[in-house]
Length: 146
Image 1 (cartoon, rainbow, N blue to C red):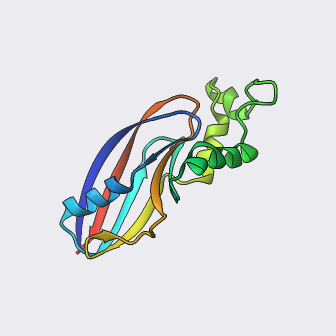
Image 2: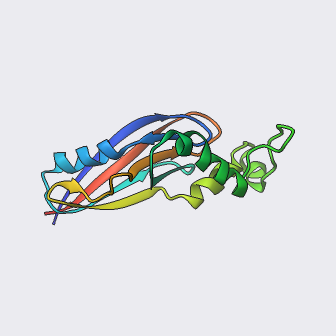
């Protein structure tokens, strides 16, 4: 089995900023020269994630963040940062970010057939920044197959 690895860097936006990386997954498959197999994308860092979603404005700019804030809010009604025990360890403010990232995943694996990702027409591969600050993130793409 052949393996091809490539890394790409992204500038992300804080508090659930999202980047459609579908084209980058497909590009890695194409560059690999492989026709059938799987591609795994893995984002380095503890407070970002990869998922699939319909990359449309309501979901990207509001709905997913609102849903994740129910499970792990950053601020209370008065605008104060909510206390998480994580803050005591590292003296930072991103405890909620770690919970959001844990609910997502740092990786996603997608099969490809005849050199094309097997995703649906409304399914976009998406990098999500959960941290409280803008960041620079890498995705390591690893393509395996024949």
